[in-house]
Length: 320
Image (cartoon, rainbow, N blue to C red; front, side):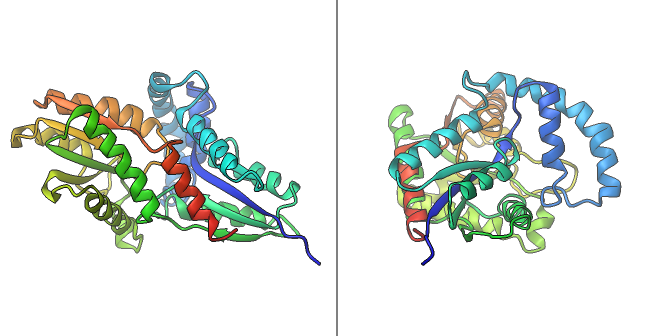
């Protein structure tokens, strides 16, 4: 009789080991070499990446990381570890490990830890609420590569996304209500999602629709007038068109339309990181205030909030 044992693999994007140019360069080299992230021909892309982008971008990005680095390390890794620990506490009989698509802890080591623990079935939970080929599919690809090295592979249950899961929407709504109670209801609630090239969507990536699904369900749960909300996209990179409207360009225009008080959240990020703590909470705040805005509050990511962990429990429970 075969012994069955389930394990959980939480996956997020990754982070540099330190807020230094060499560490950032190592991380960006791995991240930007993934064809799921940048699908330009390697013959064209790699010389540009290694000869221009990495030397110029790494020192600049390292300084941004320095501005948000926590005592325990990179915010993304700190909050991801807390999520892992909190979920493990809720499910004490099931091994819960953390792996990153890029950097450490690696997916290779996470998978090895589960296999060494005797796990026969793995529940993979990529912490990307809205599916994209550049995130969730990249996890799938890397897991396939890793499992190809094993003679005996475990069963795999892969959670594609959870954009409109009731527990996820409930957790988001709770953070918004808390912010409204603390700062007052704003003129506008802005939901900023990470962008992707428009071409990816044109070629079949349903990420924009999944973002719209989250926005629709969240607005309904909050019972807020749709005209008091807006959905935008941030963090564009390169020269080709990305999903619009762009968050930074939108913030420049809002004050002239009479919107002086806004609150901004990033529903696509399961943990606070460079793109939320520096880009949204700092850079975009300055953009809005310099354009004539008066009040700007960033609503933190779900991180290890109890409602967020409850959502994870619900997501994995159907496969236990």
